[in-house]
Each structure stands twice: as C-alpha cells, then as structure tokens.
Image (cartoon, rainbow, N blue to C red; front, side, top):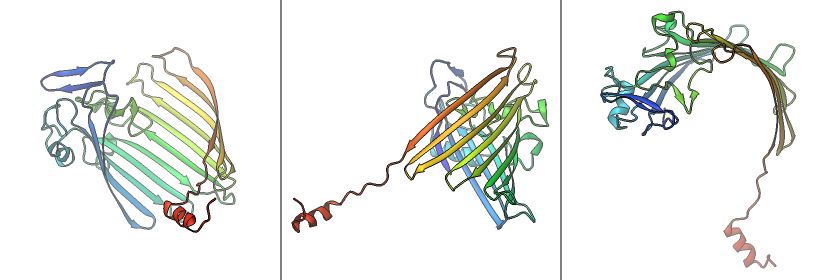
Length: 298
C-alpha cells in the first residue's frame, strides 16, 4: 500500500464551482493518490497480482479517513467534486510466467490497467496493456540478456470510450500525471509502442547496453498523429569499488505534424563519473574514553 500527494496540477473541476485553476499556479490542496496491490505465487513459475490506484480529495474535498476509505471500497459514483465521489480509480493486473522447457532463462510477463472498471482481465478490450519477454541469458552466451516489450493505450474499443481517456478525468483535468509526468505507461495517451534492450555483462557491475524504442500516437487523437524513434548505446565501467563511469550516446527522430511539419533528428551524448566514498571508521565515544583512560592518546 502507498499513500501520497500529487504536485504540479493546475486545474481541477468542482461542484458547484466548475473549473478552477490557471497555468500560472497550482490549486491547493493538491489531490491525493493511493495504491494497493495483492500478489499471489501459486507455483514457483507463476506469479500474478491485482492492484488499485485512486486520485481523490484535493481542493474542495477534504482528505479525511472517510474520503480515503471511500476511494478504496466505495461502490457509488458521486458527481465530480462532491464528498460522495470516490475519485479517479484505475485497476490493474500483472502476470509473470516462466515458460515451459525454458524456465531457467525465459519469462513472459504482462501488465494491464483499466479506468473505472474492477479489473482489466474482464475488460481486456478497454484496457491498456504491456507485454514482453525477458531472457535472463541466451544459450551459449551466458553473459547476454535480452528484453522485448510491446505496449498500447490505443485500445480496440476505440472511440466507444473516448480517445486518450486513460489520462483524462472530469474532475482531475490534468489526468493521471504528477509534475507533468505520466503515471503508469510510458506510451501516454492513445499510443502504441515497442522497445528492445540487451545487456552484455563483463562482470556483475560492468556492462554494455544496446536499446531501441519506437512509439506512435493515433491520428484520431492528435491531427496527423506522430511518432518517435530512438536508439542508443550505454556503457557502465567500475574502475574501483568507489569510482564508476557511465557513458551514453543516443540518436532520436520524432515527427509530430501538429508541432512541426517535418521530422526532427538529434544526437545526445553524456558522461557521468560517480564517486562513492568507502565507509570511514569513526571510533565511538565509549571506545575513545577507554583509549584515553589507558594512556593511548598523545
């Protein structure tokens, strides 16, 4: 379980006040967010879980034990901005399964969430899903791992439930975000994407990584749609126990006609040097007293 407070949200809808806020300020108090998850492992090779997250309270509705419990177990659906409103709820389901005959090195996983439904399992066509395969090592190349992952929020139900609705709510107008950053899937609203990354481990700390990512946004959500593709290489090298160097080079291409007519390309490179001081021995006051008493200090 977790409980926290959002930040960076500028607009909120309340009853009977209507829309409140502006781009130059944030409303106060900010909405709360809670989350609960139960996981089960019936066999050594299968694990699955169910989760619930809720945005609730905020300006106009106080954060109290009642509103907190109502956000978790409330069965009603009051008008946005009233104490009877349980908030903006999303349920989730995740699964991890070690594949038959490949259990030592291959795992399938899936993670889905849905808006205002009790589970994405029952409403799979109205849910956002991520699915992937993880190979902890490749046969005959034991130091190489690989992950393949696909994701979509461009659901098959389409316009029947409203484009981009996973990150939109009638009360919390800025949706499922914190400081402008998406909570949940990295793909965002009404999108599809895939990513691949692989590490070659020279030692448990030293590695080189190759990564590729592609995402696109539906034309039904943004005029002309859009896409983003990037590919990169990263290296982590520990020179000593306390000093490491991380270097990264990434090429990116994006095209969103609503922002700019033609594609934009850029290359980014970075180098990070990290220093972690080793634990310094500091004698306790009791030990120093013993040494002084024994005449061991000049």
